Length: 91
Image 1 (cartoon, helix red, strand yellow):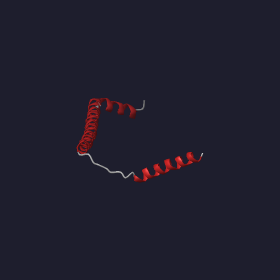
Image 2: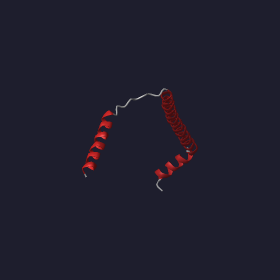
Image 3: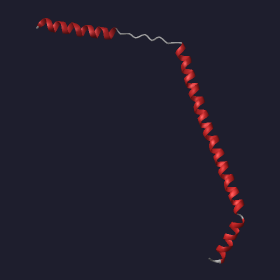
């Protein structure tokens, strides 16, 4: 090895404990931040889902009535039956 590499190796070896400690701290900080973000996302999803379903349950307590006008359908069906009866009478 060249003298430069030997000096670099000795320097890294002398600071190895500090380097490992720093890497461990970085790893722990990364894990804590990731955990906080995941908990925040899951909490937000849970809160949103609870609000959504709770709002739906409030809406289902007061049912709405909808009126449908079926006169056009009844007239169409009666015309079909009348036409069918006329066709069978002609045969």
